[in-house]
Image (cartoon, rainbow, N blue to C red; front, side):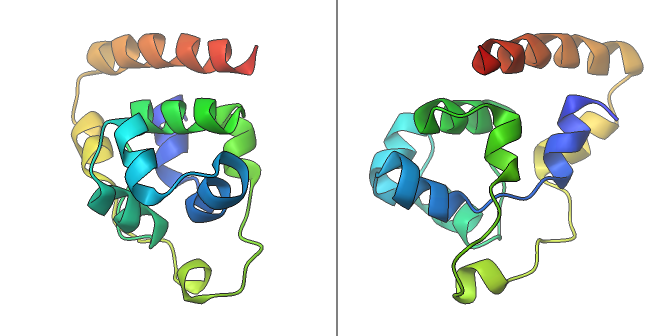
Length: 120
């Protein structure tokens, strides 16, 4: 399983990390990630996904590696953390699955060095 496939199946309490570690509002985080506040809201309510680049930026803001970010599980007991992870795949992953192996390899070779760089 390559890095993108792993990211599509990972779970993280993004709301908890945003509030307790990064300390930003949804709007402030959206500006830093380059996405909409609505997208941040959807991800935090488990109705959407960040792109791989947004996950990398999020991890940088939290001063964590991507792997460490996904080890943070929900500690709060509220409706947000009790919702199940969606069974559907994010749009970017669906598209990735249908790429040729050579195109998948090119994407993997681009993203994996970024993740290694974040671990430093």
